[in-house]
Image (cartoon, rainbow, N blue to C red):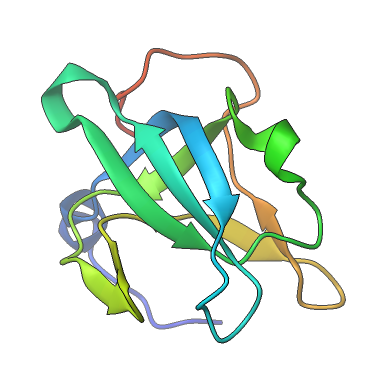
Length: 113
């Protein structure tokens, strides 16, 4: 089991839903990845993210898909790309990432409660 945290610690992590509006291959990444542009609604805007999701997802299947992302981490420089949000997912049995998402459409920018 992981370390116990206070609820106030969880509240500090800003997890929002957004819709992928662009996806392209990220050839400079050390591990296979895509560069994503995600629309998190009018309050957050469009943000960039690098995601190692190439095993389970084809580029054509990503545009229009809603995903969850942490929007209040500092940006990370990944090679020539600046990732502004952390797109969330779970590792399957082989370690390939499966995206975390809402099971029904919700407005972009809504916060995880």
